[in-house]
Image (cartoon, rainbow, N blue to C red; front, side):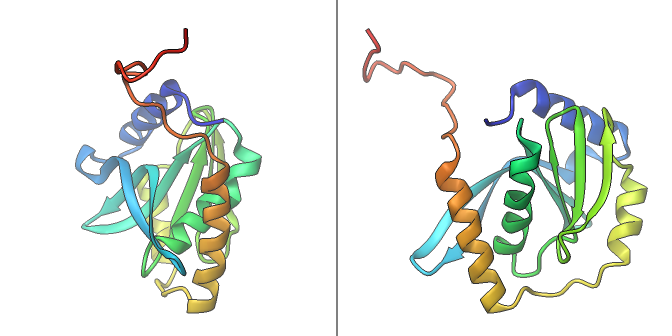
Length: 165
């Protein structure tokens, strides 16, 4: 299931309350994953950048367990040098992972790690590009998740092009 509007609003609120600046938070970001069949556009709920460098991507989903691998694959496949951190949240529980290792860094209920804590953790991670072989594998994993995802519903469901009557 895709994230609810409430989860996205709560996530933005928690990011701001935990020290992030509005200019560091890009919502509904589109990224390009390079696949053997060409470039694929993928979307994320939040891209957090500090001083112009990606720090973390955040995916909102009501299915945390099944989507943790999705967000890790997305972070590894859509960047030349992946952001050090990636997160999945349902708005109530937030799990932050180290992108390179896939290990969990933090799990919080009804909160988000502070900007200072995330920057301190990221400073300990040496930014390195993903190997070509690893990137291809991550892209295949990402595309499998993307194919299984429900498409985002446009704001206007009935645009006059059809009817469910």
